[in-house]
Image 1 (spheres, rainbow, N blue to C red):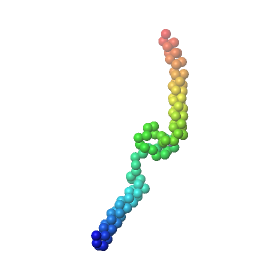
Image 2: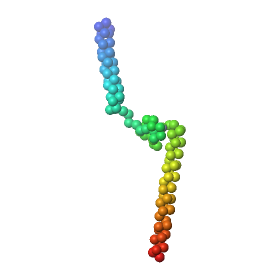
Image 3: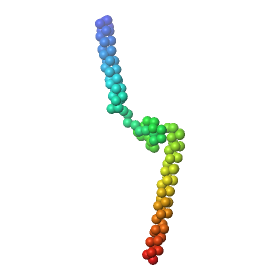
Length: 102
Ligand SMILES: [Zn+2]
């Protein structure tokens, strides 16, 4: 290989490298402006970005799982309380109507 060949090869290699570098920097600037980003969800407790396929939407932290189950149980208790409250309100009315009809 002659010296001129070597120089030509080095020149093309640097041109390819420059192209790649410009592509990378373009990608980076686009990511910075928020146009391109990986599809993801956030942990419902601590808002850490997680995979889109994570179900339930939680990160791997033990604390988040405990927190989530606590919230879930309190939500269930609240909905039960709501139904009980409605029942307590409605049952006397139903009894009264039944008494008036008979
Ligand atoms: Zn979390």
